[in-house]
Image (tube, rainbow, N blue to C red; front, side, top):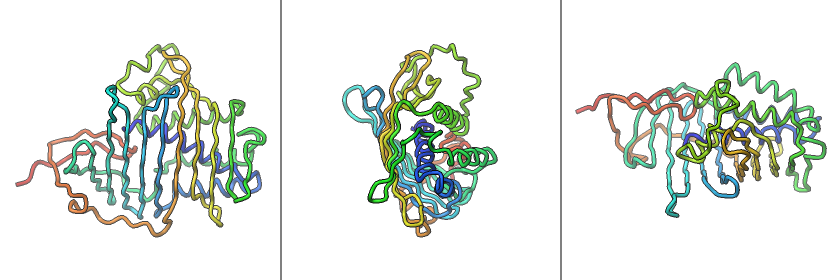
Length: 314
């Protein structure tokens, strides 16, 4: 389930770029700064997201998620649905509560229990680093070049004040190059996937992997936008309230040729300054602790470091 993070990161990057460039050259930098602030420097906010994923017209994943950030506490919930071969649906997901460095994990496939670990403390949705700071600066530089980055006439403003972004396959190569770099960055950050070690003559096919998502991540060598239609809504201060739309990506895969990934999504931003996350209490979630000597959970969001559990207590 964590493999969706890269795809959603790419999608989020496309939305951020669209938001940054949406109001034209005069106000693009200001809107870009507000969006970057939301993701990297906002200590109290709620984000809700819904996304549907299809490959070559066949649905393979649905995601519903919510992230509540309250200073150095957070609560994020993820619900996933995917099809089984017998026609039924597989359901998965998790709830993670963090409090400073403490982390509490509850997973759908192990109901009634929680595992405790640790993570790097932070007070923002996305973790800010020296490298992300440089990427943000690069994006801001592009914000003043809307026609160059997205193509002439790609952005319009509706009568209700919402911003409409329509992109076709004629999107400038600069945008596709930026999209690929963001995807590589997300893969390295969250899963330690180093694409510089993957040779271009690799012939691994999508069917070589257990899930469609894994196949996409490990066989895609290049991404380009086929089409995108995105609507953005902001408040009177220019802060992003909602982003929704449909994005179609051409995937050039190593052993399965060109495939098409379609993503429909909606993201709502709310409760800035009023979001509340209570200190973790197992009774609130109807769970009890489970203890093992060690649980190698991995990197769910880039900071969680192998959840280590204590010995069972009497």
